[in-house]
Length: 638
Image (cartoon, rainbow, N blue to C red; front, side):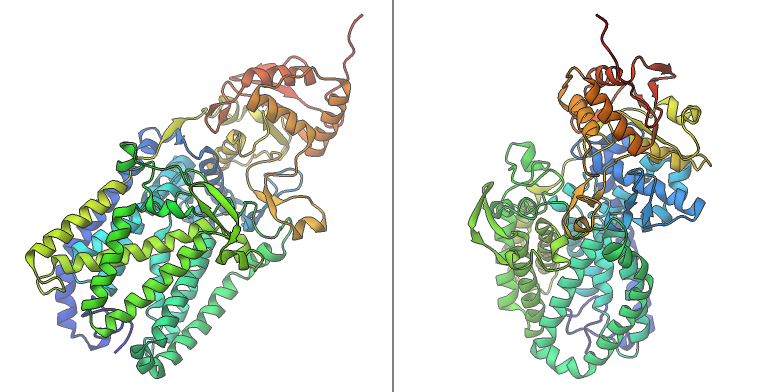
């Protein structure tokens, strides 16, 4: 008896070990399952393309409308993979952004794994194609890997495994994160890690299992470190509960040694490979503590679990609820029908299952309950209102290392996984001949209930919009006439969460792989609140500490503010541009914002007040800047 098993006889804890299955039987199983695997892979891929169709319709111009900035940031990270391989530069720190300070990439979602693996695609086709490809494959791969996981560990029916895999891979939470997040759509990574964790009790394979799990953890840290942290918590809790059960205690004598040995090997392998990024994260330059986002803001609303998502079939009919922190963090939204069906399924499976399967159900239920409580954050939120007088479980964890860097709302994704596993087990009983559901009418009723619970949360395609095209001034390399080698140049306004264009255009320049590259001030990334020792121990922020001239340009772009500038403003601008070491600024024909174009006319007026009339170069307006000299004072004529 072992927790590691092929397609199960009953459940995780009572299946025939791999080494006890005859080779001819294994071969026959593979021949029977391959056609189903291919069909599921094609269905998953088609669903991924459907959700991401807006990106594919015009990949070089379209961007996810609900999170323009995060897509731009990930395109930069992907392009940095080309630069990294070309120049063998530091993968965890760069001075290309935030001149003259730089950025600690280990504190950000640098996605080095994706950046390196997709570097050829990024170089030859552009980071826009790499982004759309990875996003599509993430959703499709998440559904397919969890289908394989279910087929291997929990259910016999391929249809049941497909239902569970598609439920998670295209759940409201993952589709929500598809609005810009390459890291949080990587549910396939969590599935593979969970798969290998369940193999740890295998006898005489502790060395192999430990090495593989260590490599998977290294990869997972690069893909989505926070998701790996959640996977470790959920897997550890599941195994702990299983080991305390009667079947687990009976097997503990045989299982504890390979589990501990495997984990020791995992710690050595992962610790060795991750020593550098972990050092950069916890002790490197420009580090900070905690996160740049508010935990109380990014907590799940209690009602959100029972609500329907806005971007779903139910939402299309006006039944969706706007209870998420933003469109990218709508992580639960399972709907009342699915929640009711989940508890009915738990009750049915519990009452009619063998004691060994009840161990699995108990462990899954406890994992779901704990992660549900964690997802609610430190204070209760109900229908959009925070009840500060009602502390919750996460209030005990807000200052605990690692937990202080996690966003509670994302714990809901583990709850969704449990829902997918239980629904797959219920579907298995519906389609199997020998089933816990004995009557034909009962099977039909449950089949209809499954469809009725899933149909309302079926996703709609991601919303997309057009963004400004890369200027010829950048794509042709004409910018090199205005900036020294590795000099600093910026578009207006300075790059930030609201205006990501300059960061994108630097990314496209990196992706082309030329020898010449410019640096830029500011950018969209997480960093310290200030550059003192106190900043290293304080929570982070988006972008650099603000400087007055950056604020001036931001307000002009965002709200159209056009104050009459004085020589005091120009003196401050002289200090700021000298600090950034900017040699030229330019204004494109369009400036992309989070909900459309920003105010170009206001930017033109403000910058002209600072530097005088611009020079038309290709499709942009350019102002040369002499650091420490420009902008010069201006005196009104009497």
